[in-house]
Length: 506
Image 1 (cartoon, rainbow, N blue to C red):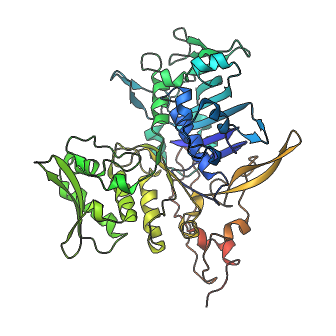
Image 2: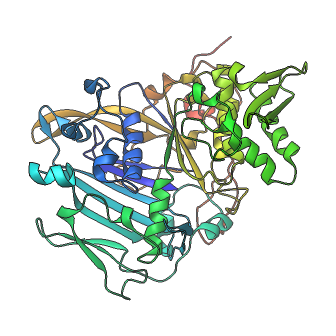
Image 3: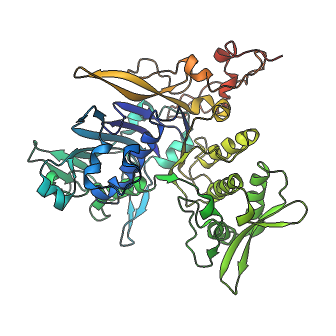
């Protein structure tokens, strides 16, 4: 779970500091940098399993590339640019809650000593072209992984949660000197991989300038199980780009039962979920009930197993008894189905990023889509287990209909801001939150609340006399669990401080 991300020098992300909850919606106009934030998440995730040069290919390129195959020189397009001058480095800092157990590449199980960690990575372009040809165009300036102390948790976890949820995911009590560290000066820097416990055993040191990949990406359980768990967490961050063509495909019976980032393997995943439980009919009925929230004409959802051709086909049965195969369903219906299956899959964890989930969905059904997306995310008032996996959902949108319905404490609004550095003007993206929500911390520097005028363009006209949704007392977030009152989320459009600005509809 990604709780905080700081990025600077990556595309138009300059001094960006974003705190995420279990479900986060980022709204903003086209071209302001919403997708760049997703690209930063995607890039950081890719560095955990690939060489740096390969991680570059995992993110989208600027429009000036016109879809061409990326070249080594194109790496510069990832760095912030003012005119013809590129930022010398780009840096990432991620605070995250990682799984307590992970499996290494050889099937060995590793148990993390600490599960609330901060990972830092700073990269620069290699200036020596000969070295860049052999090791890749990027070099590591610094890399570190440390744990966040239990006593400091309230300073880092701002959203509401219960003591039971926190106790089920946070482990580690003893202090540690860190799991990855960078030492030395420019040209002689070394990155050290420490064993769990800090002082026991000699750390493994590697020259920073000679590394084609991060130290974290090469970790295994024998060296440091905590680092391995951090690596698995980063690897689990996915971009969901559900493609109708992939969602309509049939699957072979022995297909891997895990939904692909493009929506592939949907029949195989649903079939496996149904067969792995004691009551397959109940699983299909749960999916049908979800789909009924989107489409009234639904009686059932099921998978046809064709033994002769060894194929699995997804069907939706209408109220009149007609069976509709996936290939005849609408794009919006298929995307909704995929998300409903994802919600039931306990193996689908990590961070799920989804661009414009409202595509193909009727505006009147957007509340059902939002409810489903929020339900996919972990419930921070219940312990994490198979029925409540540690899963996070981040979406972006520019839809007024979606912004009006999203819970106000889940909303971030992206905007372009003029800044000056070294005497040169440039535009950067900022992400602001609504006042009187959990991100609105008094005395914390750098926090920005969204201007009401910016928000009004997203809200549909509603009656000024509309009855606002009542909100109970906020949960303190105190890990001691003194206050564990669940706060009922209100819709953005019903905020009292916005009602007076909305036109009255007769």
